[in-house]
Image (tube, rainbow, N blue to C red; front, side, top):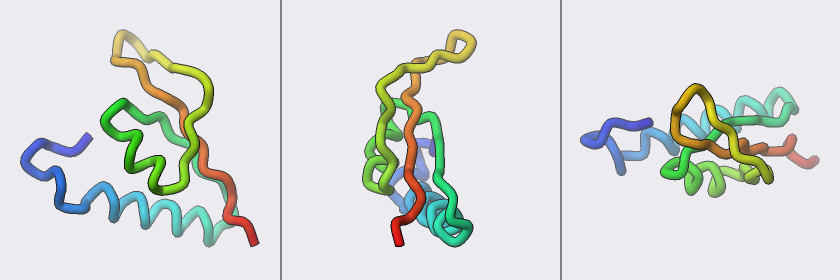
Length: 72
């Protein structure tokens, strides 16, 4: 989660771009658990929501998301 004063400055996008580029270079898929506020950037980065909701120790629910290996 990004602190409120730092939102909208591209930090999450830069991190997501770096992580997905690394995964592509290694030819591996990516997995993450997204909260409601983070699903948009994950979707724009090629992640697809899985049909399940996860709950961890009383935390708000999150959605598992998967980004397949880059297609050659």
